Image (tube, rainbow, N blue to C red; front, top):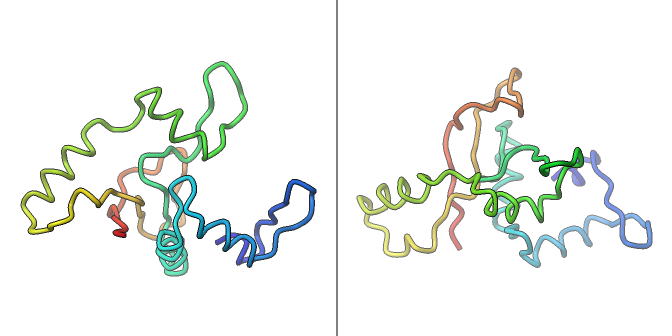
Amino acid sequence: YMAERGALLLLNDDASYLHLKDIYNLVTQGLHGCSWKCFEVYRHLKALGYVVGRHGLLWTTKCKGTSSLISSANCEHHLESENLKSEGDSAILTELFSVLDISSCDALKVSFDVYLPNKQFKKSAPGDPGFMLCVAG
């Protein structure tokens, strides 16, 4: 999304810039919980002005004993190993989906926390999301 807006330049291993086509190819590989569907949803919500974050991941995370930030690829593993994910998320969703008549609820999981447009939004204290979004498929 940021590369589309010109706010981010990505580099290859050989320090050459990646073109948007190359970035799109990386996204379509579906690595690290990113899929093309999730990207399209994220892009659309951002275009509407919402503040969007991946569900279950902190905005910034520091490893114990170091001051360096960990990459988003390692962040989910780090959070799982430190039990920082909310234990109640799965139970709450399971309870909500059991009331609904959704045959494939096992395939659904919360993808994004979405916050209403707000100029005073702070990543350090995001508060409760306006809604959580599941991306199916």
